[in-house]
Length: 178
Length: 112
Image (tube, rainbow over all chains, first blue to last red):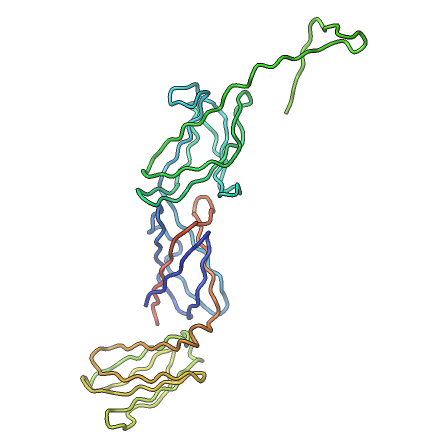
């Protein structure tokens, strides 16, 4: 006899008698055969059991100055996957020489694909970026999202003599560290 | 005569939780009386004949008429089953440790 456990936000509960069970998964966007473990023995001493499942999609975040496929790439921008509230999961991914940050093993499905949340943690130091949580869905196994990191705006910095009002300093260097 | 297996859900796969089972033929004569072992009992009954199965466990009683036409019969002690402790299942993405937002796990019992 089969017992189905509905999983919501990573957790499901049920009443279940002690036995050894073969485990199958039905998760849209994932490879259901990757459920691990695929067999579990329920016994009286344990009431919580953990499983993992994997996906095979690839999401490329392509970062350029103008957000186009041919724009100037931003090298060294960093991203991480999150949930809807911004909690971070997995490892930080950095854009390569082409401006690509590649997330492997993400879920995809033609219909009903899970939402993939991510956020940018940093740019290359010379460009502005949006650090809010973004999202997308993959309807095909590979997909690319174009992301804009605009150049920092030109700023005017004035340096004057403290003891002689408005007297400009002829030549100097200021270093700003964030 | 045919060897028939009776399986009872709600007892767990545990030799210490036994249901008391009585089986009567169509004339009301007792043809079997005994306890389950690991939720199961086996006995020989006549194919095509009607029997009354009476099983009791922790005050819960199952009374069911059956006609023997298959090798396995399953009965459920609903009250006992629902009193089993709730089991929590956690499902996460293997590579990201990210909780799976929505899905199903289907478990197939091997002994019950």
